[in-house]
Length: 200
Image (cartoon, helix red, strand yellow):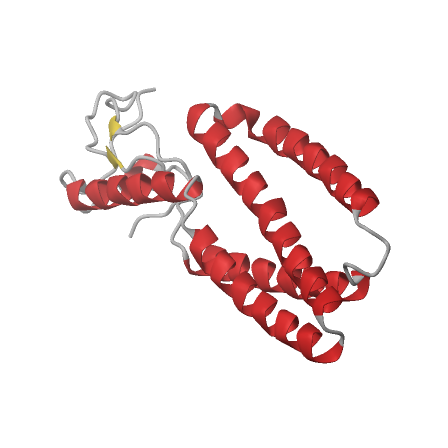
């Protein structure tokens, strides 16, 4: 028995979604540039330096030069620690995104080893006040992470990769139902295409 085509309201014509497709393409272009961008380093370094100056001034007033050197060293450690990771991951991500995880893990191990060497080689004869160094590291850590979180929250990043697109082939019953597909988004189609949907 051959199924008869649905009756009732006429099938709608093709839906022009070219403007939506162009908008998605522009979003993808901006998002792709932002994923591996290093623009956040400017804000992060600004916040880090402001916090470092405040800690250094406080250290100078309380303990003098040992505190100053400790605060400066702590601020430098935070900046180097995060900047090395950001640069390494961004560079690898642009060239080979599938290797980003390995690059991040390798960079992390190298940083931990380098940090351990710094901790071992720091003079213990009161040239550097370790308490002020720890304080500067704490202030810099929270400041840097806060600036980076703000960048992530306010940046428009397309998390769905739009691929594919075009016009769907005719349906099996021989009736060419016009359908337009937005890449990576929704399919606009007639209600008669969906057997589970009631039509008035």
